[in-house]
Length: 115
Image (cartoon, rainbow, N blue to C red; front, side, top):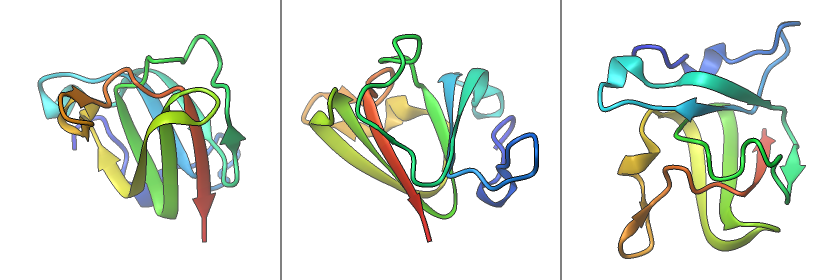
């Protein structure tokens, strides 16, 4: 998937497994997704109030092997919710939220766990 790493490949600088990586940018072109600033999410990370810099700014994500990321559209863990299983989601604009919305630039809280 272009710039997006595979779920089994996501690790921090020290080689430790990450639960997920959240990206600020996506693109109409899949090979240009998972770009811009990125936020590493460690296993077990529970964030009811995402950093202001990241609030409603995430456009693509990768969830690690044997992990799942649950997100909410409002903080603290309120509004719409969605669970992403292990895999690559290069364009959150393609993931439905409610009747008319999508998950692009809509994440305000998250919890990530791995088995």
